[in-house]
Image (cartoon, rainbow, N blue to C red; front, top):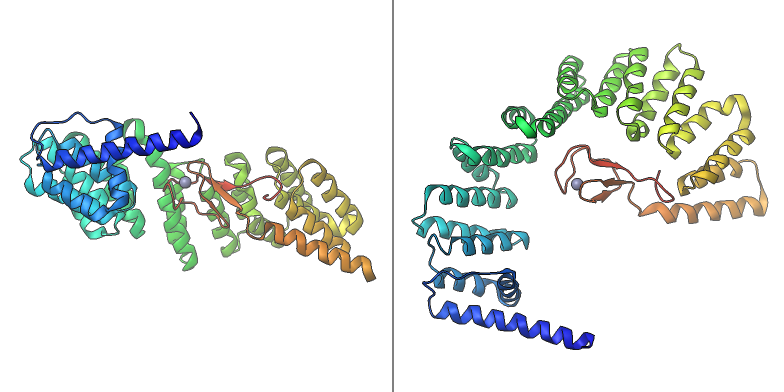
Length: 391
Ligand SMILES: [Zn+2]
């Protein structure tokens, strides 16, 4: 069969399922139906055609009872995945208002509704319902707490998030929530640092390290705190911990690190040794450029550009190329200088729209570093992108 025939067949099947469902709906189905994935394809098809009518027909025609509950829940879930949260709310509220279900089934539907509220941005309702549900026993309790936690994350209510996460950080989930708690404290510390409330910042960082001693972000903020208070050597030792914690984040610390070295009495060679050790772990062009800059006065522009060029041979990046051009522009004149300037703007245009960071969990990409992934809502899964168009 040709491609076109396959396509037609698919369309017919979907239509047949859709019509079948529609007719069954008209006949007021009382008997439970066993439904497979094709059924939901049919449902999807109907929703694509006339979502409002499909949803209201479904609600009117198919009574809610223990046997049809799964189908109603499937429709609610389907609507939510399609981003039609308001309709998902209608479906879930309909189940709750009509059904005489077993208690566990009712709790399950209420949880779904709390998740709808969360996604719809109805945070007060999501918080209230999930807190009520977290008073229940068993699986419901922890599932409800996860919804409450997300509400506090969205609201940036870190103190409250810490309280809930501590209740979730048990058994298998312990590591995951300890990591999150560490980041909640980092959020608090960052806010304190911004307000120059160093004491509150230090207290929060102590907690952040206590909950996850490998959190590179805690070292970064501690270094920034020390730097802001004029403790340069302490700042350096805090920032240098990042190499052993998560070397991909060294790049985020370079600004504070070079400033701290510039203001401390420590020999510049110590910075270079550290950066070279970092380069062995992660081929970051930012580290190469920091190293090259710190050597500039000693070795001169020519040796510096040779050093960068040598690194680019092994790990070519466009950002490295533009830096190399910058070094040469100053030493050339006339047509050569014009050409280099044109080349530089080409190179810049190549990376202008390119993301610099990517989430290793869900693939979300962006130009700046988010510690909390806006898409999958995991912590510290967003890392710099390496390669030609990245670091
Ligand atoms: Zn993500």
